[in-house]
Length: 73
Image (cartoon, rainbow, N blue to C red; front, side):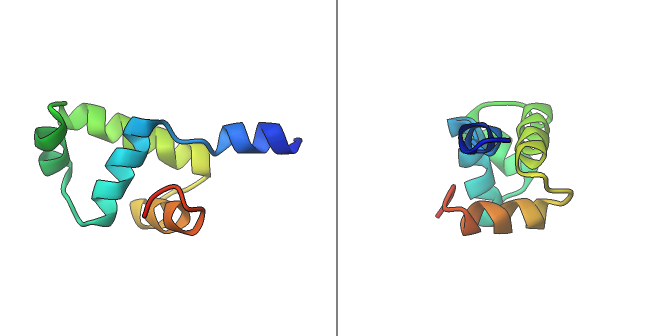
């Protein structure tokens, strides 16, 4: 895998970054869904996609890795 491919595999969408940022602040799926005007199922989808992109199995690992890589603040 070259550097461009690695970068594209770990690139989160704007919505994924937004949701992971809210997770980092301790928000629940329900609160995130309400704030963003989406369903909880859609929140779960974005969390799952972000976890897959970054190779994470848990939400805490997702948040920690996103912070470490500067994907969220």
